[in-house]
Length: 267
Image (cartoon, one colour):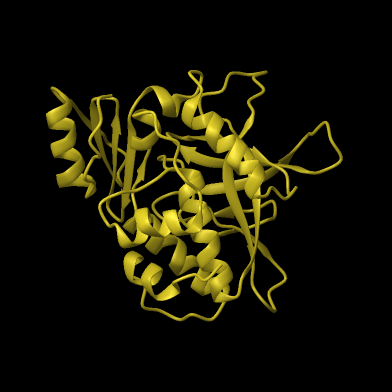
Protein backbone atom coordinates (compact mmCIF):
# COMPACT_ATOMS: atom_id res chain seq x y z
CA UNK A 1 0.00 0.00 0.00
CA UNK A 2 1.07 3.63 -0.52
CA UNK A 3 1.55 4.44 3.16
CA UNK A 4 1.81 8.08 4.26
CA UNK A 5 4.64 7.58 6.71
CA UNK A 6 5.16 11.31 7.33
CA UNK A 7 1.54 11.75 8.41
CA UNK A 8 1.69 8.72 10.70
CA UNK A 9 4.90 9.86 12.40
CA UNK A 10 3.47 13.34 12.86
CA UNK A 11 0.33 11.85 14.42
CA UNK A 12 2.34 9.98 17.06
CA UNK A 13 4.77 12.85 17.58
CA UNK A 14 7.83 10.88 16.48
CA UNK A 15 10.81 12.88 15.18
CA UNK A 16 13.63 10.37 15.69
CA UNK A 17 15.65 8.13 13.43
CA UNK A 18 13.93 6.26 10.62
CA UNK A 19 16.52 3.51 10.34
CA UNK A 20 14.94 0.10 11.07
CA UNK A 21 16.74 -0.81 14.30
CA UNK A 22 15.76 -2.07 17.73
CA UNK A 23 16.17 1.45 19.15
CA UNK A 24 13.83 2.90 16.52
CA UNK A 25 11.31 0.15 17.21
CA UNK A 26 11.34 0.92 20.93
CA UNK A 27 10.82 4.64 20.39
CA UNK A 28 8.03 4.04 17.87
CA UNK A 29 6.14 1.66 20.14
CA UNK A 30 6.14 4.10 23.05
CA UNK A 31 5.19 7.04 20.81
CA UNK A 32 2.24 5.17 19.28
CA UNK A 33 0.93 3.94 22.63
CA UNK A 34 1.11 7.39 24.22
CA UNK A 35 -0.47 9.16 21.22
CA UNK A 36 -3.45 7.05 20.14
CA UNK A 37 -6.00 5.78 22.69
CA UNK A 38 -7.59 2.34 22.79
CA UNK A 39 -11.37 2.39 22.29
CA UNK A 40 -14.22 0.24 21.04
CA UNK A 41 -16.85 2.92 20.42
CA UNK A 42 -17.65 1.59 16.95
CA UNK A 43 -18.44 -2.00 18.03
CA UNK A 44 -20.30 -0.67 21.08
CA UNK A 45 -22.65 1.24 18.77
CA UNK A 46 -23.09 -1.66 16.32
CA UNK A 47 -20.47 -0.68 13.72
CA UNK A 48 -17.76 -3.09 12.51
CA UNK A 49 -14.47 -1.14 12.29
CA UNK A 50 -12.89 -1.16 8.84
CA UNK A 51 -9.37 -2.53 8.59
CA UNK A 52 -8.83 -1.12 5.10
CA UNK A 53 -5.60 0.91 5.08
CA UNK A 54 -7.22 4.11 3.81
CA UNK A 55 -9.94 3.89 6.47
CA UNK A 56 -7.38 3.33 9.22
CA UNK A 57 -5.43 6.37 8.09
CA UNK A 58 -8.59 8.47 7.98
CA UNK A 59 -9.72 7.42 11.46
CA UNK A 60 -6.48 7.14 13.43
CA UNK A 61 -4.05 9.45 11.64
CA UNK A 62 -5.86 12.23 9.79
CA UNK A 63 -8.71 12.20 12.30
CA UNK A 64 -7.06 12.94 15.63
CA UNK A 65 -10.14 12.64 17.85
CA UNK A 66 -10.51 8.85 17.76
CA UNK A 67 -8.68 5.70 18.71
CA UNK A 68 -9.34 2.05 17.96
CA UNK A 69 -8.94 -1.48 19.21
CA UNK A 70 -6.19 -4.03 18.58
CA UNK A 71 -6.89 -4.84 14.92
CA UNK A 72 -6.91 -1.16 14.03
CA UNK A 73 -3.87 -0.21 16.09
CA UNK A 74 -1.66 -3.09 15.07
CA UNK A 75 -2.70 -3.06 11.40
CA UNK A 76 -1.72 0.62 11.20
CA UNK A 77 1.47 0.09 13.20
CA UNK A 78 2.52 -2.89 11.07
CA UNK A 79 2.07 -0.81 7.90
CA UNK A 80 4.28 1.92 9.38
CA UNK A 81 6.97 -0.58 10.39
CA UNK A 82 7.02 -2.07 6.91
CA UNK A 83 7.31 1.40 5.40
CA UNK A 84 10.39 1.94 7.58
CA UNK A 85 12.01 -1.30 6.42
CA UNK A 86 11.06 -3.77 9.13
CA UNK A 87 9.76 -7.23 8.29
CA UNK A 88 6.48 -7.80 10.13
CA UNK A 89 4.55 -11.00 10.78
CA UNK A 90 1.07 -10.65 12.26
CA UNK A 91 0.15 -13.29 14.83
CA UNK A 92 -3.07 -14.16 16.66
CA UNK A 93 -3.10 -14.60 20.40
CA UNK A 94 -5.46 -16.01 23.01
CA UNK A 95 -6.26 -13.41 25.68
CA UNK A 96 -5.68 -14.91 29.14
CA UNK A 97 -6.56 -11.94 31.35
CA UNK A 98 -9.40 -13.10 33.58
CA UNK A 99 -9.33 -16.66 32.25
CA UNK A 100 -10.00 -19.50 34.65
CA UNK A 101 -7.82 -22.64 34.79
CA UNK A 102 -8.77 -24.89 31.90
CA UNK A 103 -10.44 -22.15 29.85
CA UNK A 104 -9.68 -22.38 26.13
CA UNK A 105 -10.32 -19.04 24.50
CA UNK A 106 -10.27 -18.35 20.76
CA UNK A 107 -7.44 -16.46 19.09
CA UNK A 108 -8.82 -12.95 19.03
CA UNK A 109 -5.83 -10.66 19.67
CA UNK A 110 -3.66 -9.34 16.82
CA UNK A 111 0.02 -8.87 17.67
CA UNK A 112 3.00 -8.03 15.45
CA UNK A 113 6.38 -9.76 15.38
CA UNK A 114 9.01 -7.47 13.85
CA UNK A 115 12.48 -8.09 12.45
CA UNK A 116 15.15 -5.49 11.72
CA UNK A 117 17.92 -5.91 9.14
CA UNK A 118 21.21 -7.21 10.58
CA UNK A 119 19.55 -8.02 13.91
CA UNK A 120 19.19 -11.72 14.78
CA UNK A 121 16.27 -11.10 17.14
CA UNK A 122 12.56 -11.13 16.40
CA UNK A 123 10.64 -8.66 18.52
CA UNK A 124 7.15 -8.83 19.99
CA UNK A 125 6.00 -5.22 19.53
CA UNK A 126 2.35 -4.75 20.42
CA UNK A 127 0.59 -1.36 20.52
CA UNK A 128 -2.98 -2.66 20.64
CA UNK A 129 -3.54 -4.57 23.87
CA UNK A 130 -4.99 -1.58 25.69
CA UNK A 131 -4.76 -2.72 29.32
CA UNK A 132 -2.63 -2.11 32.40
CA UNK A 133 -0.74 -5.30 31.55
CA UNK A 134 0.14 -4.22 28.02
CA UNK A 135 3.73 -4.28 26.82
CA UNK A 136 5.29 -0.81 26.53
CA UNK A 137 8.60 -1.77 24.87
CA UNK A 138 9.47 -4.39 22.26
CA UNK A 139 10.54 -7.75 23.62
CA UNK A 140 12.88 -10.26 21.95
CA UNK A 141 11.12 -13.52 21.21
CA UNK A 142 13.01 -15.48 23.84
CA UNK A 143 12.49 -16.69 27.39
CA UNK A 144 13.46 -13.39 28.95
CA UNK A 145 12.27 -10.46 31.03
CA UNK A 146 12.07 -6.75 30.26
CA UNK A 147 11.64 -3.82 32.61
CA UNK A 148 9.53 -1.60 30.37
CA UNK A 149 9.24 0.99 33.13
CA UNK A 150 6.95 1.38 34.95
CA UNK A 151 5.96 -2.14 33.91
CA UNK A 152 7.72 -5.49 34.04
CA UNK A 153 7.11 -8.37 31.61
CA UNK A 154 8.43 -11.77 30.75
CA UNK A 155 7.96 -14.32 27.99
CA UNK A 156 7.77 -18.04 28.70
CA UNK A 157 7.35 -21.14 26.57
CA UNK A 158 4.50 -23.30 27.84
CA UNK A 159 3.26 -26.79 26.88
CA UNK A 160 1.30 -26.88 23.64
CA UNK A 161 -0.79 -29.52 21.88
CA UNK A 162 0.51 -28.65 18.40
CA UNK A 163 3.93 -28.71 16.71
CA UNK A 164 4.69 -25.01 17.34
CA UNK A 165 6.06 -23.53 20.53
CA UNK A 166 3.45 -21.74 22.59
CA UNK A 167 4.57 -18.45 24.12
CA UNK A 168 2.91 -16.66 27.03
CA UNK A 169 3.34 -12.96 27.80
CA UNK A 170 3.19 -12.30 31.53
CA UNK A 171 3.06 -9.01 33.46
CA UNK A 172 4.22 -8.54 37.04
CA UNK A 173 1.23 -7.00 38.81
CA UNK A 174 0.43 -6.71 42.53
CA UNK A 175 3.37 -8.89 43.49
CA UNK A 176 2.72 -11.79 41.10
CA UNK A 177 3.12 -12.80 37.46
CA UNK A 178 -0.17 -12.65 35.58
CA UNK A 179 -0.80 -14.15 32.16
CA UNK A 180 -1.76 -11.63 29.48
CA UNK A 181 -1.99 -13.71 26.29
CA UNK A 182 -0.54 -16.77 24.60
CA UNK A 183 0.47 -17.20 20.97
CA UNK A 184 2.42 -19.24 18.44
CA UNK A 185 4.43 -17.84 15.53
CA UNK A 186 2.04 -19.06 12.86
CA UNK A 187 1.38 -16.12 10.49
CA UNK A 188 -2.16 -14.77 10.17
CA UNK A 189 -3.28 -12.64 7.24
CA UNK A 190 -5.79 -9.91 6.44
CA UNK A 191 -8.62 -12.35 5.57
CA UNK A 192 -8.10 -14.14 8.89
CA UNK A 193 -8.33 -10.92 10.85
CA UNK A 194 -11.28 -9.79 8.77
CA UNK A 195 -13.26 -12.75 10.11
CA UNK A 196 -11.99 -12.31 13.69
CA UNK A 197 -12.68 -8.57 13.63
CA UNK A 198 -16.26 -9.10 12.47
CA UNK A 199 -16.89 -11.67 15.20
CA UNK A 200 -15.45 -9.50 17.99
CA UNK A 201 -17.39 -6.46 16.80
CA UNK A 202 -20.75 -8.20 16.47
CA UNK A 203 -20.98 -11.30 18.65
CA UNK A 204 -23.08 -10.94 21.82
CA UNK A 205 -20.39 -13.05 23.52
CA UNK A 206 -17.73 -10.44 22.79
CA UNK A 207 -16.90 -7.95 25.57
CA UNK A 208 -16.29 -5.27 22.95
CA UNK A 209 -19.77 -5.42 21.43
CA UNK A 210 -21.65 -5.16 24.70
CA UNK A 211 -19.97 -2.36 26.66
CA UNK A 212 -17.82 0.72 26.22
CA UNK A 213 -14.14 0.16 26.98
CA UNK A 214 -11.62 2.97 26.51
CA UNK A 215 -8.01 3.16 27.64
CA UNK A 216 -5.24 5.71 27.40
CA UNK A 217 -1.64 5.12 28.43
CA UNK A 218 0.43 8.14 29.41
CA UNK A 219 3.97 8.25 30.82
CA UNK A 220 2.71 8.91 34.35
CA UNK A 221 -0.71 7.24 34.46
CA UNK A 222 -3.22 4.88 32.89
CA UNK A 223 -6.79 6.02 32.20
CA UNK A 224 -9.73 3.70 31.67
CA UNK A 225 -13.47 3.86 31.13
CA UNK A 226 -15.31 0.57 31.52
CA UNK A 227 -19.01 1.17 30.83
CA UNK A 228 -19.46 4.18 33.17
CA UNK A 229 -16.60 3.59 35.61
CA UNK A 230 -13.70 5.99 35.10
CA UNK A 231 -10.38 4.84 36.61
CA UNK A 232 -7.11 6.74 36.91
CA UNK A 233 -4.07 4.65 37.85
CA UNK A 234 -0.78 6.53 38.47
CA UNK A 235 2.52 4.69 38.00
CA UNK A 236 2.64 3.88 41.73
CA UNK A 237 -0.24 1.46 41.14
CA UNK A 238 -2.87 3.22 43.24
CA UNK A 239 -6.24 3.69 41.57
CA UNK A 240 -8.96 6.28 41.87
CA UNK A 241 -12.39 5.38 40.50
CA UNK A 242 -15.56 7.36 39.99
CA UNK A 243 -18.88 6.54 38.44
CA UNK A 244 -19.97 8.71 35.52
CA UNK A 245 -23.58 9.79 35.83
CA UNK A 246 -24.81 9.42 32.26
CA UNK A 247 -23.84 9.36 28.60
CA UNK A 248 -23.27 13.11 28.61
CA UNK A 249 -20.64 12.80 31.33
CA UNK A 250 -19.04 9.85 29.53
CA UNK A 251 -18.72 12.03 26.41
CA UNK A 252 -17.28 14.87 28.47
CA UNK A 253 -14.61 12.67 30.07
CA UNK A 254 -13.78 11.09 26.69
CA UNK A 255 -13.13 14.53 25.26
CA UNK A 256 -11.28 16.04 28.21
CA UNK A 257 -9.19 13.08 29.37
CA UNK A 258 -8.82 10.88 26.29
CA UNK A 259 -8.99 13.40 23.44
CA UNK A 260 -11.84 11.42 21.88
CA UNK A 261 -14.92 12.95 20.28
CA UNK A 262 -17.50 10.17 20.56
CA UNK A 263 -19.50 9.51 17.38
CA UNK A 264 -23.22 10.10 17.49
CA UNK A 265 -25.16 6.94 18.24
CA UNK A 266 -28.46 5.71 19.59
CA UNK A 267 -26.62 3.04 21.54
